[in-house]
Every structure is written in structure tokens, then in C-alpha cells.
Length: 199
Image 1 (tube, rainbow, N blue to C red):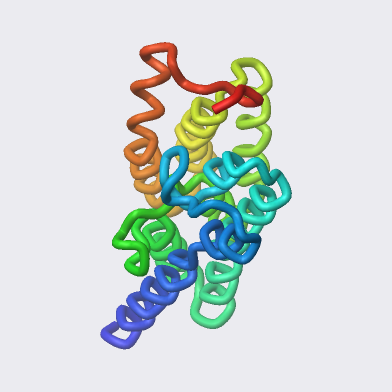
Image 2: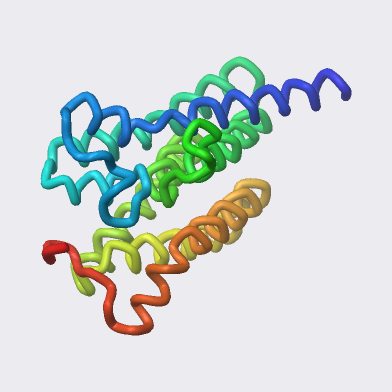
């Protein structure tokens, strides 16, 4: 049992290490754009990268942030098992939100959420993306689409009988909502920026 718990802890730490890689910051620095931390929300995610005016860099950030979650979950699952994969998922999500290298100021977690979900149960990741696209198409609010999709995922997993996964993603969804608290307030105030709008 002690060795097993140690393996889970190691998976958590490795997950955090992978998750804390600030791809958005690294990519924009290599491209010579303005420091991400000085524009928009100041976070390192794809949405803020888009504010540099470089859609290609934003797309690359989105993909890499997703993959860093998927890869570490797949590795932990392959070499240790399902519980380690879930521990790595939690670690990757925490690493992205609170990277030690950036004084614990990271992204809001949507891409990594999708990535770890893809590694653990791909049909739920597909459902997340479909819901996101539907809500975003109707409302043109990216943040609202992510909030709605992340609220549905734990319920869907619970309904499907995946209780441990449902519990994990209930925690991840709660953290994602917390990271979007400013967006939630702007949605309430009617000041949240819409997809395609300037600023």
C-alpha cells in the first residue's frame, strides 16, 4: 500500500511538472511578441495569446496545453494504472493553473481540462467540445461555453457510472469555475467580451 501511494504521489508530481510548462509564454517569447503577462488578463492560456493578434500562436498554445495533459495521463496510465492516470490529471491541471515557475499565476485551465479528459475518457472530451461549440455558436461567449461544458461533464460521467472520474472532474470543474470568477462577474454585468469582438 505504501509503495502504491508513493506511485500515486509521483504521478501527481510528474503531472504538475508537465502541466506547469507555460507553452503560451514560451511560444510568444520565441515569436517575439509582447509579454503575455502584460496584456489582457495576464494569464498564459490560448485566449490571452489570441490577444497578441497571432491566431497561429493561439492555436499552437491550445494544442500543446491540451497535449501536455493527455500525454502525462497516458504515460501514468500505461506504466502504473488508472488511479495514477487520475492523479497525473489532477497534477497537470494544478500545474497549469498554478505554475511554480510563474509565481503560481497560470492559465484558466480549459485546454488542459480537455486534454486530461481526452486521456481518461475520450467520449466525455468529445461531448465537452460539442457542448462548447454549441453554446459558443449561440451566445458567442467563449467563457460561458467552457463553464456550461465543464458543468455537464461530471454529471455525464456520474450518469454513465464512472464514479471516480465524476468525482475528479467535479473538483476540476469547481477549480475551473473559480479561475473564471472574473468572467462570471462580467457575464452578469453584460460586459464580457464576445468571440470575434475587439479588445
